[in-house]
Image (cartoon, rainbow, N blue to C red; front, side):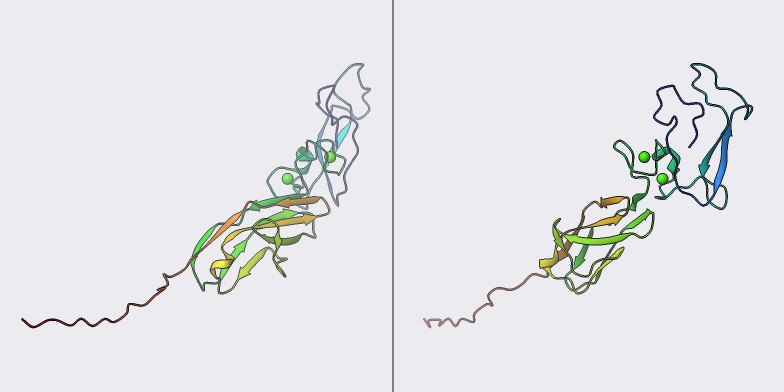
Length: 189
Ligand SMILES: [Ca+2]
Ligand SMILES: [Ca+2]
């Protein structure tokens, strides 16, 4: 992580590094043998950021913002005030309204440093057994399964909870009591 063109109080100055398979030359000052000027905010020399095989700065969580922006102090850790640059929920599960008996699928798309693990929850706190993938499938849903579903995505960088997706189950009307046959006697005048 470079020191170039930062204000003198920038958190970026002289801060650590991050692991990468490749480095790209990001920018540099005019000469490598230049001596840093007294009180100058501009450090001298080459500065590198982690890039992928195409020379694009690495975006670990896939949210379109390179790590070197989100890992603002370049130390490879998610610190207070930083976005979790190593984990993101990219698309949230979507609410659904279905007839009773339908098979329902909720899906989350997460990006981040592998491996990612998942756990789905019903009404916030009830872990859904076996629901540990990016997709939650509910078969033959009944009214008792109506409620909210969310998922917690975890990797070594932390955990993120999705928004709630509501499941509404439409139940056909039930006839509680059947009409009773009645006989009326009519009087003959
Ligand atoms: Ca990013
Ligand atoms: Ca950091």
